[in-house]
Image (cartoon, rainbow, N blue to C red; front, side):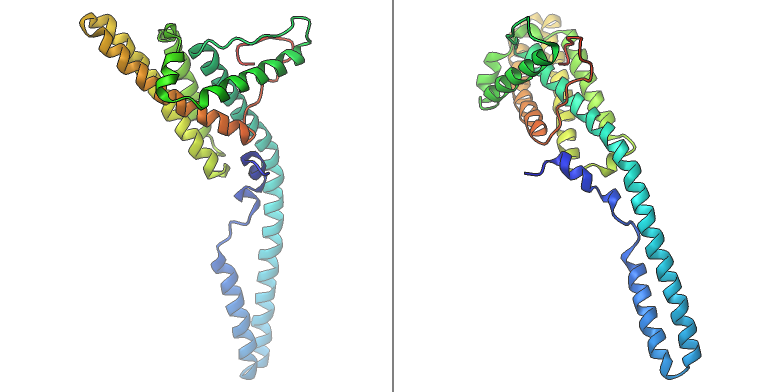
Length: 253
């Protein structure tokens, strides 16, 4: 089954960007030159040779340009795919560990690569279990210590990382479905940051503490449910890469 990451190799950058009208014009000019043969054979041959020359130039140059552009894009595409995958992997880790207190279990005698694989496998199972929960049930699983400035900064930073991916120079060559998912993810990350601010309002308005805490908790749960759905979908589409640093156990693993 083809994923969005696979489809990226069939990007529109691999196709000609010349207007179809040019090819129609060449066809019409060719027919006109042939028809003109009944009135002026020399003029017909001159026009036909010019049309053939123009068509040859357009077709050959177009093919060469597309091939050259495709070759350059494939190099860039590998880096872009990795940047997206690494960012999504970090969001998955942040949601699992910061919000829901996920802790992986592994044998300390494992090699670093084995640890990474085990962590990713256990985290995937953990997030899949959370995805099927309702927003109400999900709110009961949220670690309330998550509502702090550090979490706000983290989610705000990840929202900015996603926004930069959406607005990068080559974003126009990403699959529309991928861009849509990234935009949706960005929106929900920003909303979570906003809800953390709402939760903090209880410190300034102690009389309304329960109200602000409940509103922030329920709204956060709804956004987190959507975030979990999106990051799981993106992983299925091939976007969830561990950082390319083996030998250091980072939070992003």
